[in-house]
Length: 408
Image 1: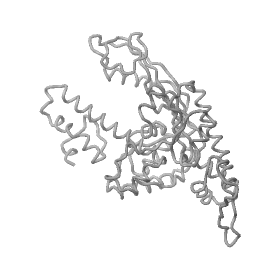
Image 2: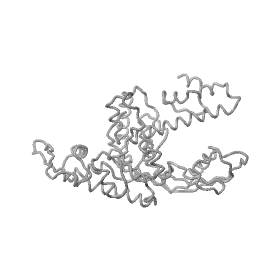
Image 3: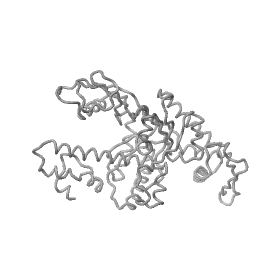
Image 4: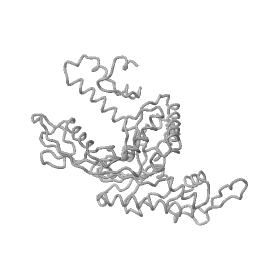
């Protein structure tokens, strides 16, 4: 792993291309040095206030009446959704199928293998500003990397911290990052609502900087070491001493006053989240409550504040379910990686592995279904293809694998 300060990104949107490129290169160099892997292809997370979501319904009348519904039918429906007319300057990032209807039979989650002529589906469509998307992709390209997929950050985080049971029961994922707070609502295993709130941990740091009249780096340290989201949980007589500038006297700050500053901003963020929960229409159906993750989730007493504001159960989401246990990873790395801060990064990695598995599977299926190809080199290459993808990090296209590529 590697990390760098995201100096060129403000509230989830690129504000300085050069600084963003430097931060990407620094993080990738660190990760490459640790793992001895030459990183070339990446999955990129996207967030920001420009992200919007909408519901849409798609209909497909099938011509092949004698065959069952296949994945290609669903793919055609999804492709149709990408052709939707969006407002000027916006483009579709994700099309997520929800429930399907086959020949007027509603509520079907997986229609593959069913017989039917008319296939309908409800879709959750996520869109973003073309300029914001292009700026992110330009930064990645300028850092000598290739983007495989652009993924909405709350979707990635949900992969790493939510269990299938929670998604089925109804849950709100709240990912408090540096520049933004991302919200994703799941019910019956299906994503129902997404939103990005333009406040995060950096907003809290700025409030401390102004409220306590300290430097920005000191404000960040105060937040991470002594910060609390509930002022009443702190004692009156606890005092922090902050060094003064260039020979000036040190500044004394009450831990309780620091907590009041943090609580005011965190309450505002949680109120925004609660508004999104209410506007989604699923407020009364969220049995699993709220799961808080991201760097901002490390604040003390945050689950209690979330429970107080929303009235829903809350827990901190750790991405350690998907990490190799201590025997495989060094203990220090394991302890650091299971921090909520890495939820989005680990989620992006899971999404990348899922994509690689799908591509490898489609190669195997396509070669095994046609008998004349059984002895061809492609069929042999499909075996063990997934291992090859992971080892080389190579992006490939189904019809464009040469013997030379495979040997390399």
